[in-house]
Image (cartoon, rainbow, N blue to C red):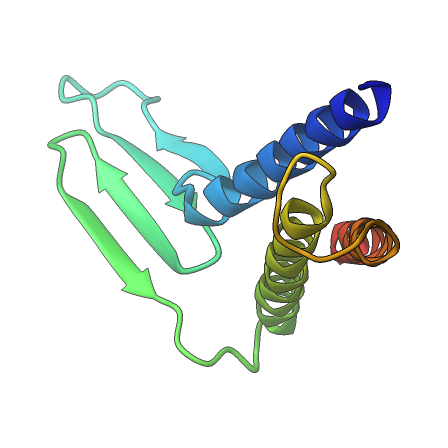
Length: 133
């Protein structure tokens, strides 16, 4: 019973971590900065610059947003590197979730007990490797 609870708790925590990283990739506001809003003008103009892994955007005080999508960025290589590492980590994490789910003691798929133990161990290794990305 104790082994089952540890496996279920570990599976839930690692799956939630994988889901949070997946949500992080879709977030729009990785970097935000405010431009303007100062000076002696009667018209207050403020603009917000925000960007993520996929685009740069500028929103002004009239709520007009202009965005520029990133294509293949050889000039900004670190964005491509971050994209690639996150995608690799998510893919490895997905395989880890599948291996751990099949290898848990409370599931009836996956074969005998030694096979299930090997699946759980390989899933744990995949989680550690995916987390390093």
